[in-house]
Length: 188
Image (cartoon, rainbow, N blue to C red; front, side, top):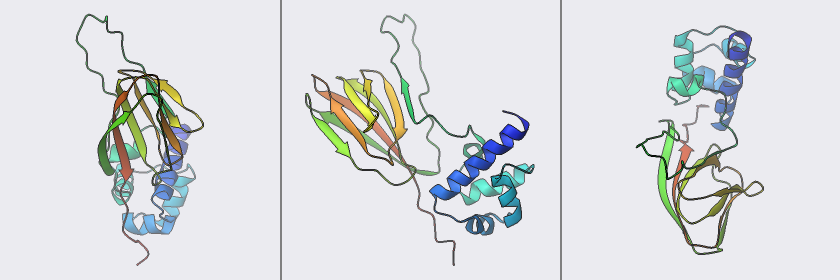
């Protein structure tokens, strides 16, 4: 991305992150020390912010600066298939980076053959990252389940209804959940 596309992407991301934290533009302007008019221009995809301005906004949103300027949004569902077991050389692959802007939980998921768990939405901004260890699992947003097999990795927003459905064998999976931290009341 370059030029106007970068400005538009930053503006969209800034607005989305502010709204996920239930902050008004005035709240973010006050918390960051960035003028309300400047913030409005940035969210509209205009202006040419300095690194100091972006840093102040990131700090007020309780994000590492890189999280504010990273790509606009991950896909709704990300699925990485396990490499072939026949791969002859050792390898290590980064599946996802968990930022410091929230809370992270690590879970173990176990389902018996054919069992199903339907889950209600978690808090806004919650994401689940799952690696299947044994068995076959269908998971994702309830209306968009994906088949995940041993070694596969899937990531999806969990602030919508989502489900886990075991195949014919027992499922064991590692689940990492990331949440945004609640922010203090900026209206005082």
